[in-house]
Structure formats: C-alpha cells, structure tokens
Amino acid sequence: MINVDIAIIGSGVAALRMYKDASEQGFSTLLIDIGPLGGSLSSIGALYKFPKIPILFDYDIRKLFDKCNFMCYSTKLYTIKTGSIIDKIKGFEKFEAQRLWIFELLNKKELCFINDVISCIISTLKLSHESIKKIEGNVRRIYVDSRTIMLSTGLVIKYKELVYTWPLTMLGDLIVTKNKELKLFLDKLVNELKYSSLFIRSYIVEERNDNENVISLYIHATKASRLHTIIKIPLAKNTHLFYAITSYSKNYPLLPGIGEKIDSELRKHKLFTNITKILEFNNINIVYGVLNKIDKELINLIKNALLPYNIKLFGRVAEWIEYDIPTIIFKSRPG
Image (cartoon, rainbow, N blue to C red; front, side, top):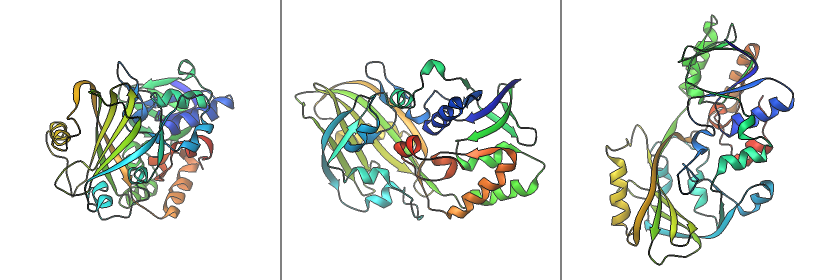
C-alpha cells in the first residue's frame, strides 16, 4: 500500500496544474494514469516531437509561456466543399456544443505552434519531468468511504484527498460507497452528458518545392468526405506536419479502416500530391472531442456531494467545462 496526502487521477494539463499546487504546499502527491505523462497532449515522434492532437495558440498567448519555443505563422483557409461544418464537427449530433475549438481555428489570421507542448507546460508550471511522481496503471475502483484506490495491478493507494481529472462519465462506475444516493446522483448526471468524438490521423511528410511558411487550414463540410478539417503546419524546409480530423458519434459511427480511408481522401483532394515521403504517422481517438452544454448547477451539486469524501473535480472532462490550456494553467481553481 502507498500512502499519500493527495492522489491525482490523470496526468494531463489539469493534473499537472494540481500537482504543482499541491507540491508547493508541501503535500506528498502522486499522479495515477494509464498512459504517458501528458495524456492526449503527450508528444510522439522520433525525428520531431509533435503533439498527438493539434494544439495551436493565439499569437498574444506567447507572453504567458516565456519558457517555450513558439513557431508562429499567418494562416490560409481553403474550402474543399461548403456545407454545415458545425454539424459535421459535432458528428451530426443534435446537442448544443459548449465550444467548437476546431471551428474557432478557421477564423484565426495567425496561429502559433509548439512541438513539445507537454514539456512547455511542465516548465511553465516550474516543474520538471524528474520531480513528478507518477504511477502508470488503470484505476479499477475508488473506495470513497475508506479513501483508497485499487489499481488493475492490485496496488492499493490510500489518500487524504483525491483530485479527479478523468472523464466525469466514468466516475460513477469507479466509485464504491455505502451511500446509494451518491451513486444514483452520479448515474442521473451521466444521462445529461452528451459528446461527440474525434479521430485524428497525423503525418510528418517531406514535400517537393513547398517552403510556404503558413499554417494551411482545409475544410470539407459535407458527408461526401469523412474528413472535415485538415491542418498543415510547416516544421522545416519541405517538411510539414498534417493533422487530418474526422468526427464520429452514435449517429455517425467511425468507419472500419478509417486510417486508409483518410489516406485516400487526402490524395483525392490533392493534398498529398507533392509528397515524396511520409516520415511518421500516428492515430488517436479523442472520445470527448466536443462537449454538450449542461446546467452548471448540476456540476456544482455533484461537487458538493463529493466534498465530504475529500474528492475534487478539476479539468475539462472532469468538470464538463470547455477550458483551454491557458485557463487551466493560470486561472482556474478546483472547487
């Protein structure tokens, strides 16, 4: 058994922010997550460290991240097919979205990119990779009455306070308690949570005679293509990073062989015409890509219900609020 003051479930931006706050106050703190440090923001790639998902910042945000190396470019928007791009980004779900960050990018005149986003965030929080204590494992159960966490490995972690940053939809299945009302309340809340998902295929490619220093944004707004957004970012001479994005949902399921389908569509739309070599590629599913609007009072009620058990919710999918990275790092507080 491991005993800690504060256990944090997750290892993304919200978890790192809470780790920083807890460490500064002298608490023994531990991150618990099944994947690598940084979650969906963790960098991959052998030649170029690049984030699994397209993280692009406004030009004015740079001053907040003075330890990070930004590459800033003007943008160009290309429309392959006109139509209802918002519906397509939502996977043709009927709910009202809190925020469509992909759609917001289409209206930006200038955007900035960081290769290794998670290292940037760690340094901005005045942490280091070496200082962060993390256990890699899946959470099987949270026994809230005894304040213990059971991992799939069999390891037990006893905490005084728990910060939960994983998706709110999962919390009811993880919690074990004698309080039946709490479980019923969590189950009722989950029925209010709607979302659509993103499948993102990224590539680093070499291209012939393409040294244009702009971020190119391509949109396809009809069902004639599975893709709705393609983002092309210059990395070096004749070398670009592509993000090809499709949405899916219960009403618009992900097709079998979607990766090969995306390859084919990129060639069809002549976006891979000048490519001489694909250096690297990666696929990722962002299950909670677009979140629906819900009554904030519901979230406040569940937060209050969890307080007697010393459990706090923090972060985008835990609080079901479309935070951006700067807000999580510099402004937000759990409560």
